[in-house]
Image (cartoon, rainbow, N blue to C red):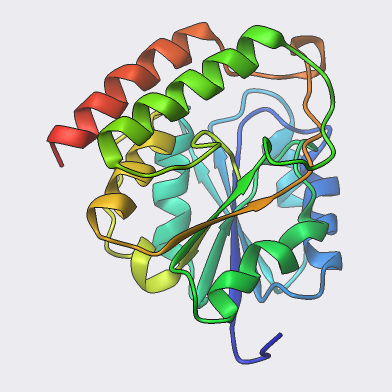
Length: 230
């Protein structure tokens, strides 16, 4: 791997006081990351107090006074990154930062502008909800039909961008609509998009999972919206 790439990780956070420090330490322990940009999206638990106790020069923390959604948190985070490659990392423990080398490799090798980590291509994954799986596949299918891509996992957290690509995207979505929005916009830009298999350690609702069927219905609207409008 080339050493001249600076890697930035953006972590949107909402009510993850139990896991956020663990995630940050796992990201730092990869020894690949130049900076971590954490955006607390108006958490109502002890997340902000936990984050204020951090004292690492490679970690910068920002806060929204009110909860605005994942899209808003990513927009704030992207505005502050300084690296050459940008990775989105959720603040729970569903995705493993140890897989960063696989995720960034297509960009480092000069083959890709954007890389998606797919949960549906053979990686280790926890067995959870059938209808979530069906919903994810249907949303990906609809997105593919309108973007002319052949992704297997449009809704994945692990999306990696060359920094010059993400700087061209003006995020409009407030919540989870950011996933189809980013996909539609990189497709419209003609980016070289790769997928790599990743592991997935999903949570159930008792463990803090937040996305619901309402977000799935909203995603349908956003897929249509960002296919025909900017």
